[in-house]
Image (tube, rainbow, N blue to C red):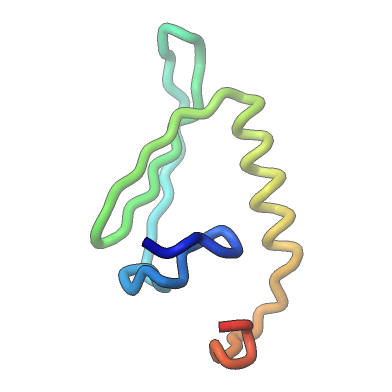
Length: 81
């Protein structure tokens, strides 16, 4: 088993860019209102239920990573791979 680096596992040949769809909805649960976030790809579906605080943390992390993107596509040899 390989060790994840930089937030993903480069040793997993199944990981790579692929079309994905995200849907969001608010649901009432026994623990209160939650944000249900579902991400679908051709090979998997993942749903997570987030409290408002967790949703804000995810938002901040995503926004921070998006701010670091430069829009360039680099070959692995130039991207530390």
